[in-house]
Image (cartoon, rainbow, N blue to C red):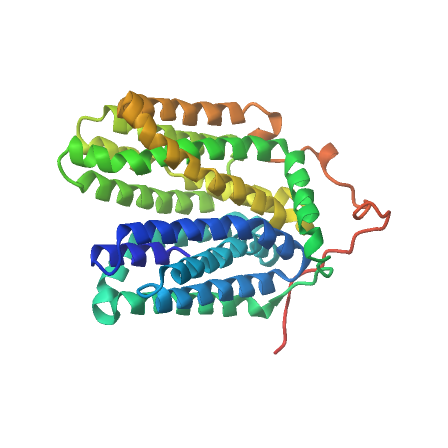
Length: 399
């Protein structure tokens, strides 16, 4: 999932294609991702999640192969391939998170989610180096083919896990089925508060860092060292945070998670006031975002009913990822209008304030929904007055 941006960026550095082409390709991938996230969430709640993960991965594999065939020839087809890749990527996220809920016992899910986030951070840390070394052996296009092979491998792995769902109710009902997930998400006060905090940090904190770090690195310190080592420090911080949180189960997990999300306010603040490069790098070591991510995913898997967990996850991904480009669009004009320091301080205050506000609702303290608001064991199913199908455990398929 994280390999393609490295490879496309490496192609720009080697002159295989232009930065403008890279921007269009990544933009189309994001559009495909946002289109597929709600669809993937609905399908994952209605059919076997392992099958949804398989077809989503195959879609991403197909888009990746098509990209290799069109990247240096026809830009419109390359954009279509990038869109297809984004569809597969978006559909796989909620189905995979729901699949973790099925195959891992509740007491081990926090460690499993920590392993997931650790793998992402390791990919971000080692991916550029591996891509740079491998490109000398197989070339840029060969690297994209290798990424398609990884998607194929990811598609095949979960096929042995089978879970049974009621048949999908048709494409015409996807919108209403997604709204069921949105209503379920709204029922959990801690989810709404945490999502608000996450949106603010993603839209303003991350966007400010992504736009202004290169400027600060070159203009204030005269090199790209702060950019390089800052990103490395942030990735290492994520790995260390995931390793710690995999073993540490906090009493007030929600407050700890929201505090971990709010700590990102230090990043734009350091960019605004730091006079030495090591100050910024040290700050990125402190902002361990996995202190939020791991308890957040674990809480969704624990508190949301099994038949709705993928849809609620898709609500999370849709808003947290979908609003991030808004921040990227407004940060640069704001810097031109009022200056980088004012923008960075504002973003820092917004990140800290949003996380503090998210701690106010009572359920935010533990990321748990009060028992009185949980659905009863017997409830109507889609308003027809019938009992829902019993939730069946995942079984290993015999081939």
